[in-house]
Length: 138
Image (tube, rainbow, N blue to C red; front, side, top):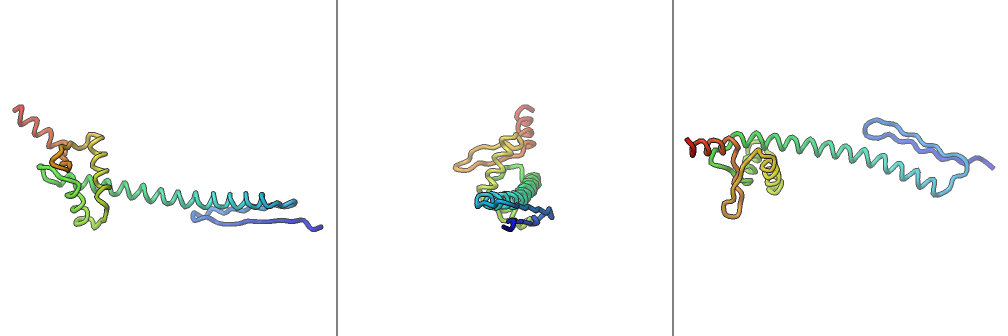
């Protein structure tokens, strides 16, 4: 009886080459495990690429928001103001909740101060807060 063999070869998006060969008593569950391994390797490569793109996008968006905040007026700003400026200056289309999340994180880190006005938060650069405190004490 001839020897049975199955071979699976593929290359991922990063150029890594994979080669798997099974010889002898080939059972259905062994072939399924081999295909699961293929799925695992190919999906992890796609997930890593997606994660890298997401992280780079987030860093880039964060830096753009920080850059905009440094040019905003001393009177304060809202997430809508930041969104409008992002669209105008950088031609970036982002949903308002994403901007709100970034501003809240900056507030949580102590990079911004804020106060509730009506139904929305008005944010202030920390330098503005220092100027106001100095004026009151001076």
